[in-house]
Each structure stands twice: as structure tokens, then as C-alpha cells.
Length: 261
Image (cartoon, rainbow, N blue to C red):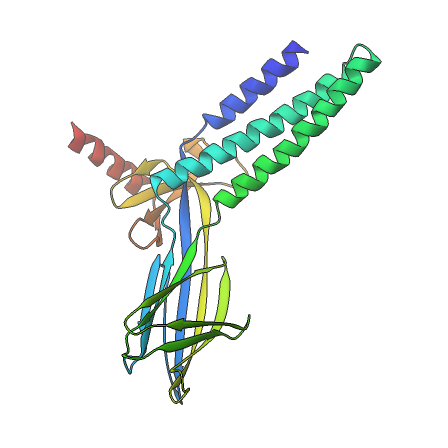
């Protein structure tokens, strides 16, 4: 029994120590305003997007949650907690099998059931940590009140002149909104689309501007330099991905090391 525990713990430790990893966001934002027969729209892959109504009536802004180092640490902590909870549930189940008597079996069985339920909670919380917050701001840039209607959910808000309304969106979210003055003499329609996710990446090198992640041959085991095909360079400014050859990466890494001496 003790051997089983030690083997499982060593296996988990070796996997955890195999590579440096981080979580990198992917953002998608789209804003569209209809003014009569005219439309304007913008889209990007950044954490912020803005669009102003041409007549100066209002402006829309989307803000995605930034994946800071603290956010990455929080995700990793939640993941580790979920992993150890699952491990505990498995080992508790094993201990139940090796019970010495009926009473011990009943106690261990109930303990296993409770630990398994808690493991589910840990996993749900870890998944929740990876859902990034999205907020939309509606700025009333006019000198009169604005009426904002969510055409999907039937909700209505009023924004005072030169004031801003903050709305927390789902992730992802698609909203159609009607924005007008109180008398509905001037009516605009806006479409808002936003979504984001975080992806776990193995990182071989990090600079102030980029992350570098190895790409392996599918048929071979990862974490082996001999099996690396090339690298992906991910920009910290706009999260674009660029292919980088092995030789170019090695030269870059060597140059960085020399500059630090």
C-alpha cells in the first residue's frame, strides 16, 4: 500500500517539474453601430476595443480581463488544488479496497465519497478561474439622456448626459442593443460580440516582448529537444503568433545569455 502511494506521488512530481508553463489569453472583440442606412464597425484581437457613434451621441468600449502574472499564479494554484484533490479521491478509493473489516470499509467508503465530491468542486473552481471577465462601457457623449435597450433580454437602462454605464458581459457574448434619446427621435442600433480564453503553453524562453514555445513531432515524446520541429513566438503586445526556426531560436537564446554576462 505504501509503495502505491509513493509511486503515485513521485509520478505527479515528475510531471509537474517537466516544463515551465504559462497561460496566454486569446481575445476577440467586435463592435458594430447602425445609423440609418450607414454602418461602422471595428474588430481586433486585443484586450480593449472602442467605437464612437459618428454624430457624437455615444461611444462603446469593450475591456477584457488582463492575464497578469498574478492571474496565471491563481490559475496554477487552482489547477494544483484540483489535481491533488483528484489524487486524494483516487487514493482514498484504493484504501477502501484494502479495508481490514466492515466498519473500516464503511468509514473509508463515506470518506471516499466526500473526497470525490470535493474534488469535483475543486475542478469546477479551477475551470472558473480560466474564464476571463468582459466589461462593456457605454459613454453618453451627448447633452441629453440616453435610453439603452438590450434587445435580447428586454432590459433597459438610462444614462445621464456625460455619464458612463458599465455592463458585465458573459464570456462569450453576442448582444444587440437599441440606443436612443428619450423621445426616440434619434435611434441607433449596436451589435456587440466578445469572447476570450486562456491556453496553457510550454515556454522555453520569455523576453520583455515575447514568449517562445516549442512545437514537437507528434509521434515522439515531448520535452525532448531532439524532437522539436520549430518554435512559436507569441507577442505580448497583440498575441500574434510567428513561426521561428530552431537555429534562429538557438542563436537568439545564445545572444540573450551573452548580453546578460
